Length: 78
Image 1 (cartoon, rainbow, N blue to C red):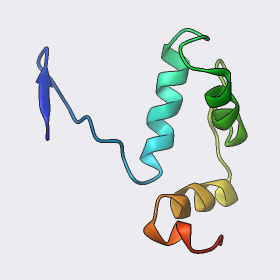
Image 2: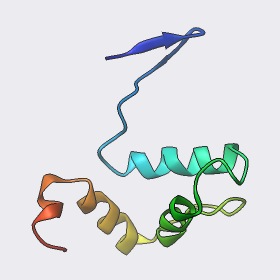
Image 3: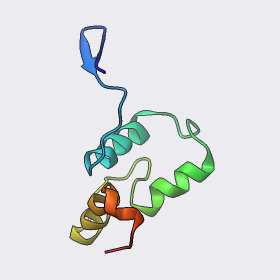
Image 4: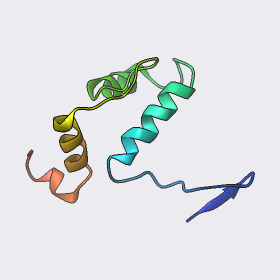
């Protein structure tokens, strides 16, 4: 489903690939520090998403986050 809000097209469905992390980083950078619960801040920080800091995952982290978005992720780690 695609919604048209104020002339901008957006989808309410999150990406199921590494683009999710890029979007999450954009949200973290744009929103106030207390916009989510501390647990979520910790989950974001675990993959390198921190307010006020660039999100620059290395090749290993890109591989892990790309793999985590696949159906095989529930089977075993890379």
